[in-house]
Length: 92
Image (cartoon, rainbow, N blue to C red; front, top):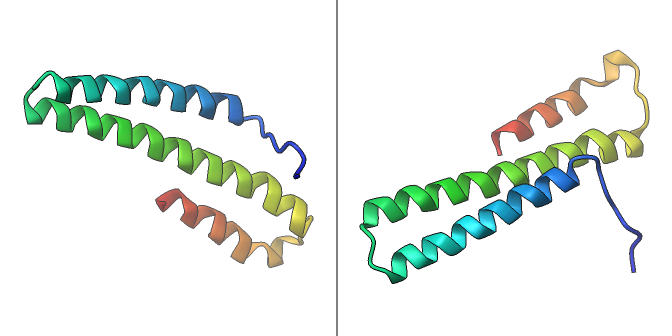
């Protein structure tokens, strides 16, 4: 069993996912009650964006903390690849 792994952003990510979970339940209710497809698609898009943002925040936070802890402090001239890798994750 692994030890507990928590970052400062985790409570906010959990809160965001719980909101998305509630929102998703309301989308299911919209489908079951026969709401218009455009309304449903708009709400699904909002849920998808919320989950995607939670994933992005989790990955970036992990890289900012865990990658730095693993590789340690590097001189500025050796950080380019690491900094570029972290920057490209913003496009996930």
